[in-house]
Length: 321
Image 1: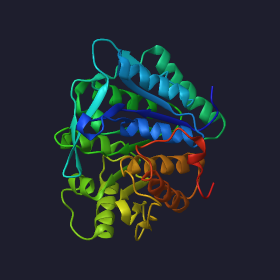
Image 2: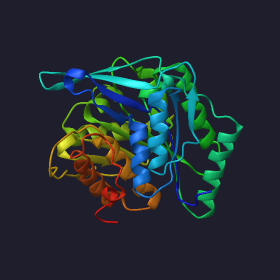
Image 3: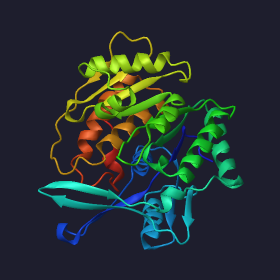
């Protein structure tokens, strides 16, 4: 059993599939998988919980994870259901996405006794060594009631565990795959919330002002919500403009600027890279400012990849670690 900080991650794993006209590429992805992969690259031992089909694409996901040294204990193989895919079509140079429905990650099963025990053991091992614990989930996998029920059940399992565990909610809105009422419920149980400015407007009823004003207003609003668990950080990504972070009682948010990528190949996965480095910093007990600077730098670095992750461990060296 790992004595590293516990990172429990649940959500979608899928393939971005480009049309034959656009090269016929397949790129492994899904925000939760990307975050788990990046955390593994950064030296942690995340437990990733998801589902794949009993098909070629699903078997390849399991093989890729194992080859990178990641545990597949939390991956269910669902017979008769296809592995998740997103059909990507390039129109006038811009990607258009069709997130295929009724796939394996829509049916992430509730943990059996063995997986529940593995989760509890990871939390306990982390606690014994004085390390913190995080439970990460996004919003996309909550589009189907079956996976949503599993995510909420897992969240309640870790929050009710005697070991203090914080929830990291990574908002990833893809219309029409979400409901506002579900977002509000998920937000209220999260100590850390990460989203972009458009998503912030969606969750905060269109608060106006510049990015700093919106972040401050939303942070104060969430913090004052009587149903909100104690808020530790509201993280607002701004693409090439960097990121903002609201922390309780602050007079202004922390602001970091993003360095330009050495080579811009593909911005997909930059937000997931940012989330992973911030989580790594939380689990390592590092100051938020240091983690934010590393996070925007690493997100910029990921823009130089053809995809969201890298198989080379040396890629994951952070400048200040």
